[in-house]
Length: 134
Image 1: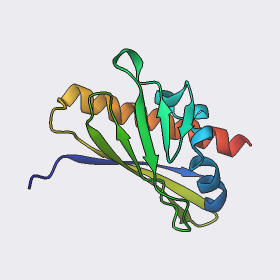
Image 2: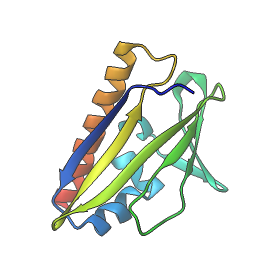
Image 3: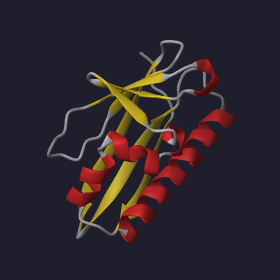
Image 4: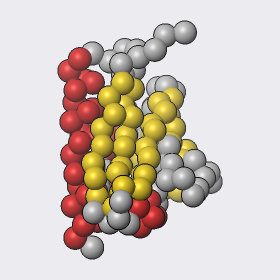
């Protein structure tokens, strides 16, 4: 079994970690900070549907709400490929650290991997800004 390149992208948010988790774990809030989901998500049973652009919609299945700060989710792309996204909120003093583990997909080149990492950095910065201003 192969292992792939990984980059853990994180930010510290000066807000109680429970509040960060409560906000960030709500799929309906993701359009406010996750640019790739700017069109919003629509619930369809246990899954959420997002606009995947010209290739079609994506389907997202989140882990159930939990006390550990885990917001992992599986994204099914229009072609059927499933990508696991590990997203965590952990306590850091009176604040929180939000971490996204980006795993390079087998068919992803260096440019695409860097573009994904940059997009995640922007999303986490937007989440930080939004939650520290509320």
